Image 1 (cartoon, rainbow, N blue to C red):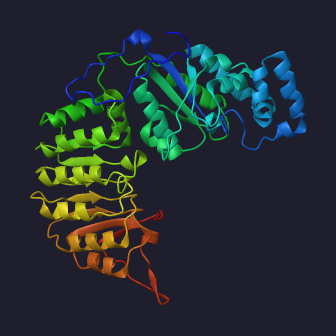
Image 2 (image 1 turned 60 degrees about the vertical axis):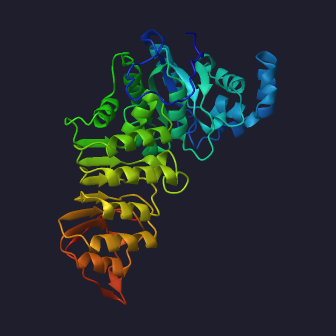
Length: 410
């Protein structure tokens, strides 16, 4: 397959028992998902304004390609004068040593065709490596745009993501592939990216652990008692089977509903794919229904899901035959009404129960704290600023079963 020619495939629902990789190993490509600002171009560099940008644009149009006349002169001058020489050298060496190519994920792709991007990269001798760009998806963060690109391009075997922003998102979804540029694509970043891209592509017979875990849960295998579908594992499963997010939720819900061995269930980070609380409320309800029917899960982690309204979840927990021992609602966006419903739920608990609420809301109302204090069976973990420790100038005592730690609410 020639440089820049990708095999595309529409994301679709793959049979849950089909664990065969359809892409042959020799077709697997190496890709660099590339940001520009903060990676090749220092954010503070303004050298282009010391030069005649109109003259540079005219010169390139005459000597190289008339297409430069259609480009923004500020972009042209930024590439020539502001891109950091050592970063450019490192990037060129990375491509030469690994035979990797660029998929532009930077904001520079906006309103630019691939030909326009290649003309800009030609100024620094990098145009031959520009293969494609990620699609701009409304309401999606950059990491999700990259995931959708990977799902629709199954011929990508090894990849790295080089960016100076969206660190939390990338490190949760792609911890093994992300290279964070603190300042610029320096030698340290280069070595990390090189080590990633020099890895062999996965064998067509290799099935990721997360995929096998989902299959074992679906098969009701006693070998799996902890189902960890944090964002990284969700991403691995989606890319392997080319599932949409809705497809994934349907699969995991079906698997959990019919499983009698898993005691720990983590399903976190879906808010990085969609607004789990509003835009896809039906998908969330499908998960809660599966949980209601399940008779084995006692430890539930649903952090990082942008949950606001948990009324259906609370009703589900009350109806379950198998009571929870731990519940993590960390890093959600619970409303006051949701906290009231949560207070009603925990007030009726009569067995040891741990509730993790760090960064789930700005602060707790006094009535909620009182509910915690009145039930010695429960332990609640939260952040210091979620608890209003002063009332009319007097410090309020912290209930013994409310454990506060450093950090902030929202």
